[in-house]
Image (cartoon, rainbow, N blue to C red):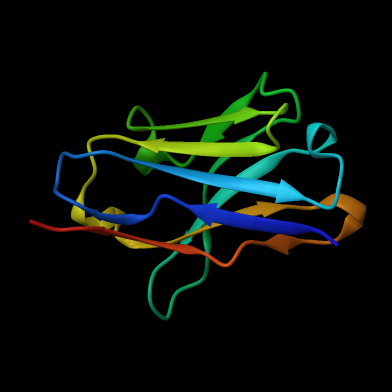
Length: 116
């Protein structure tokens, strides 16, 4: 079955950096686009960044452009989110997402907290 396992969250100071990883299994990773979402308490999940199957195209929500970079390693079935210049408003639970087999799949989420 499809599994997505995130790691790399934690506490960072404003202006600091974190790198999230999501390792996938149960489907042919290189065939599918991947995305990172985040969720604030009592809010809907919002798309943060997405990357095509080959990694040739990416897109970002406006608030993270120039600060976050999504990338993937198809040989390791892993997608990354490098987060630089972190702000307190980046504090959220971050989720990895993909949709093979016409179904939506999510990881368990990883908490990112930006605070001094």
